[in-house]
Image 1 (spheres, one colour):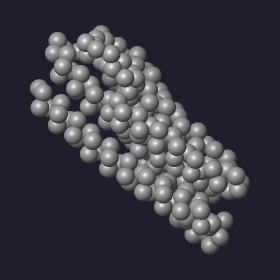
Image 2 (cartoon, rainbow, N blue to C red):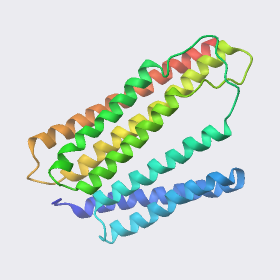
Image 3 (cartoon, one colour):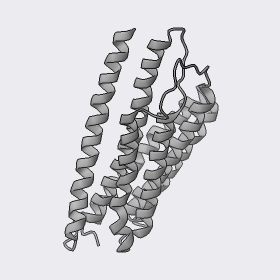
Amino acid sequence: MNTHPNVGSLVVGGFAGLAAVVYALRAVRARRRDAPFAFPNLFVAVVALVVGALVLLHVASAVVGYAALCLALAIYQLFDLLRDEQVRRRRTASLRPRPAAEAVPTVWVAIAAASVLMLAPYVILGEQRGAALMVAVCALIVAGIAWRVASGPIQLRSENIRDERMRDRASRTRKAGVPAVIAIGSVFVFISFVNSGRPDVLPLQRLLLLASFVTWAAMGSWVVLYSQYLDRRAGSTS
């Protein structure tokens, strides 16, 4: 058992409270400008509020609360993807066939999906098995969203196909990279919560905590640097 439950509860409760406020405000703004998109924001706000209350009242553990927040945010991103595909239907044009996805975003998605394997010991050993499975499902959903973004058709709005293709590549890469980083980060945070303050943590679990952190930090840096590189290239073609 975690020897510091109050700290974990305060962290998750505080994060849930912040998420509730942020998404409630986004729901209000969305209702004024884009009414259908208000519901996903309101959904996350309500879930975060309920989760924060349950965790702070010690009705639910910090790990379970965190898993529930991950699920709510994964559903929100799925809503966001569906909305984006509905409202941004533009003409699709290409002078030559392109691969289903660029190589780098494909690697990001593969790493994000593979990071779920780091949760296997927590499922096998039965330590927070339900929460571990929930976080794993959420990470896979987010990785799937990243793949959909990376492999979608090229969206063109202007007559300059070359410039628009480069801008689309930069935008698509960034939008695929962020979910991949979030998926890995959710695994890292979960392992941190479960391992925190426990004297009986197995060496493998300590190694997985380090591996998940290194993977998350390296992926985040890679996404930022590569996205900036593509943004500079897109800017140079304008």
